[in-house]
Image (tube, rainbow, N blue to C red; front, top):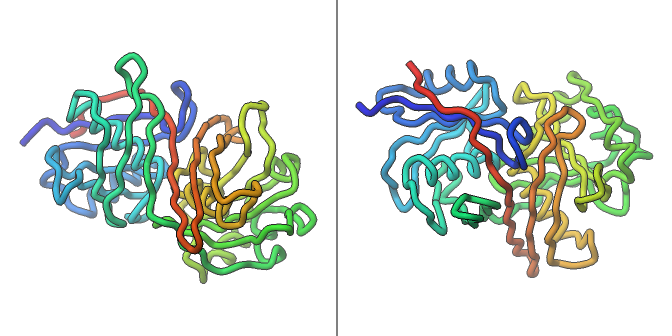
Length: 295
């Protein structure tokens, strides 16, 4: 059996100790689902991934993703970060693409390089599906806001690219910054819908260098607020194109997340809508923090 190895990295980060933390475990032959779940619980990041083999299977590297509470079919920053580990630690040479074979399907991650090192990586997500539209009063109670904070020119809508989120447009940065989770209300809101994340946004940057500021609340998964969410931002990218939020069916934007919890993150979003079809890509950088052996 190969030496059991793990990696800790920050995803959607411009430098260490920013972005969203991820643990990636390799050489997991011989451990069962229950132990994977226990490792994810012990790690207690929003997600932990397991590379099932160093060899591709069915056109992609088979990877499983666990939150502290359950296995999920797809999540954005684990997909990007695990592809980074595969390129750096398994393939060990520059490649244009790494494909992950996830429960949701095959997800390609495209690589760009600067001085031979991976720079912004892009993942093409599953085409988004658009679900229920909610009244503002149904949602805002869960995040400590009022109906007046919501930009009601655009809908509050459930969107999914494999992991669903409720997308909530806000009027300004002040409203976004004052949002706070009411755990009881939050769990009541998400109890009977597919989406377990509430994603809020406004067209204003904290530092002036991005197009949007966003926050994502995931109390259902035991993570009150996520510092960077590739899946929810993919849903958001699809939402922007479908509803012509920027006046166009084509979107290319930079998004800030995590500022309110001291984990500043930067994500790049591209999407386009043609009739009912919407294509979505999410990009960002990853930074290796640590590697070691697990027992």
